[in-house]
Image (cartoon, rainbow, N blue to C red; front, top):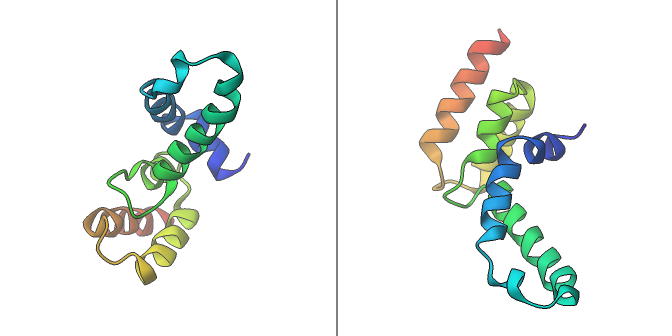
Amino acid sequence: MSLLEMFIHGEGGSQLRTLVAQQPFLEDEPCLIWDVGLMNTSVALMQLVWPMTMSFSFPESLLVDCQFSQLQNYVRLAQEWCTDWNLSSRKFVLAYSYLNTM
């Protein structure tokens, strides 16, 4: 199972369903749901995973699922170009992952 699948099966899936349920396209005709709905669902998922958002749920799910080496790689990659977003949260999960890998 990939990290994204683990995220969707856990807390990320709950958040994704909540975001999609708030979208107005669900009242449209059924043919539009596949066209517009798939795009809106993909955008909502990308917003949950993307590091430059207020959501920190993807790294949190890595921490909860004990994916410490993947979390360290995530933080290492994000801190090179994502300097201002969730800086304290990234430092905390990085320190926690270091404590659990030694």
